[in-house]
Structure formats: C-alpha cells, structure tokens
Image 1: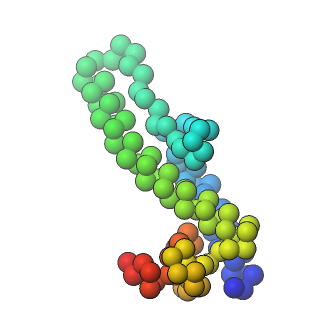
Image 2: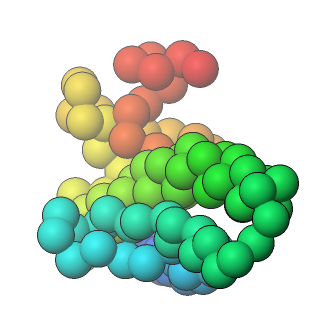
Length: 119
C-alpha cells in the first residue's frame, strides 16, 4: 500500500482517537484495568430533589450506552493504529486479502474487506 495513503489514514485515525478520548473524558474516567475501558461518572446526589436525582440517574443510564459505543470505536481506531505500526494495516482479518483503499478511506478502522463484510 502507498506510504502516502497510509500516512494520511494514520493522521485521520489519530485525530479520531483524540476526538473519541475527548468526548469520553467529558463524562467518564479512563480505567487502567482493563486497558481501554472507561467508566461513566456516577452522579453525586448532593441534597437534590428526588426529581433532579431521577433526571441525573436517567442521564447516567443514557451515557452508559454512549460510553460503550465510543469504547468500541476507540478500540477499533487503536487496533488500526497498532496494525500500522506493525505494517499489517489494510489486511482483512478474515481472509487476509487487501482491503480496498476506497473502503479504508471511508472507514480507516475497517477490519474486513467488502467480500467478508458486505455491509
């Protein structure tokens, strides 16, 4: 694969990683064990009314699913960056064939080629 394209995709992945981490930090704390895990901050109920506490708890529950989704995206980005370091980037994890450049440009964290993952 062309080194210029890999460099461009690496830069996009690094920006995406930074963005995902920034978003996660806005409502969660990074958990060092297991690596890559984040924990949504539980609301502190400081004498709020029951209605306010219920709203905070509802927001917390909503953020748990957002956290999970962002963790998965971040995991895929980190995996792609690791593959670039190991010179394994752009290979399908299922069939080991090259992933089309167009697919990688659309989704730099792609793990599968179009044939193995037609969605």
